[in-house]
Image 1 (cartoon, rainbow, N blue to C red):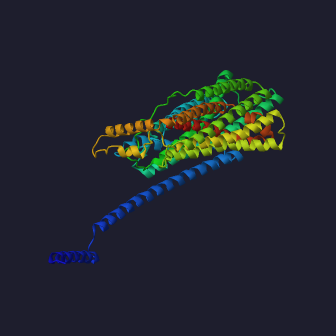
Image 2: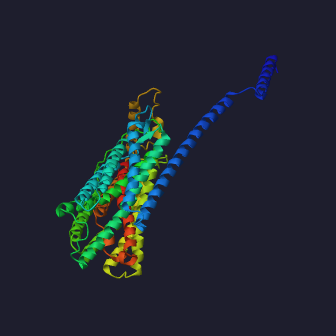
Image 3: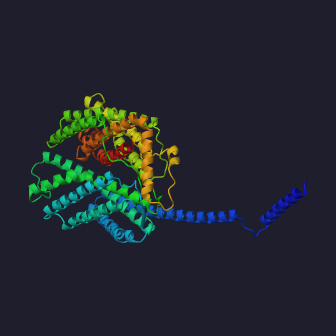
Length: 563
């Protein structure tokens, strides 16, 4: 060993000893320790913010639960003890809740959203076009419904209290303001006054939920009284003790309009509850800067799809024809059994085709190479919950029908059709939910940029414009589409199936939404379970079934666009 090598070795040993000595000194702090302390401090701040957000959600959720229980107790007492708690008492409670909700809606519209840095992010998945269109359509129908109700009450003013006119007027104001706020701010991710905003949203949600419960129960009571009065009129003619209208023609218009628009009020309340829940989940939520950008998102076009729309239009035309025939027959005193047979035969023909299409679509989803979208998405999670929950309404009616038919006489032609209809309806709900949920969890084609192409993307400059980033993402999306052109037959099949199911669900939504209810009018389950019991089952299940069909259309549109 030379002298120079010996000096270098001693110098290295000395430096290592110095480093070890510094590390052992308690007062010395390494850069790694400083970084760990900073990360720990930031994680504590983040955890504190998350705990505060959870506490706000818990408190506002408890507020909504208590309001719903209070209103439910009033409505239940009105049903079972109408002497102590009347319908007027329930209207007073709901008027108070509407007034409080209106105050918060005005404050949110004129105060919260105008604060600096109030809405830094907007959820791109919340409030799609079909939800906003449904809000406007059903909200307008609900306003017209209350106008008919005001006219009907005024025409009976000589034998009714004029105070009853105040309640529909309050509801018109509440529906109008609420629809405007939800249309303009359904995508908001509020960052200021988060706890107060959560409480306001939950109060408004609870109010809409109670309005839906009252609409369902009040509808069943109205139908029961109407059926009983018709029976009494047939047996005892000439009884004029009831409160009669002065102008019979005008009152008939008000009554027909009220009965025709009544189902839309229940759908409007359910949609408002869904939108308010998404807004509640988005309070305090932060999104990435590029999260609200959907590069290359396609518009709704057919893209050469032929067989799906053609079969769907045939189903739609046949459904409309059966609906018109049934409504014409329903305007008379009795409905012939052949119309019930025609109605259930139509369903028995359509439901297997829809189930088969859903099974094929689910299999095609399994063959696809698109990635699963595993990112947290409150809107998509709510869509799945609503699909599963709303399907329980019609499925519950079907199970009750199956038990009634099997226990009585399943050998008649009409009973066999009703039994087949109930079984196929359950199967169709299950298969359609699988197809829609699988499609919603697939990454849309314009967002599915593979890693090989993503690695070739040029790095965006730190102060570059969003236009350049959007152009890069669009080029990557076009390259992805070109690379996976051999999957075109799968995407086309998904689009064919989606359009066929969209038209079928629109047809099956239209029939019960506009007053076609053979489940009650055929008399089989009503005689088996009793008048009041079966009416309660039908009036709780049918609005959910109508909501399911409408919500399925929105989900299928998302699947179509994503394919």
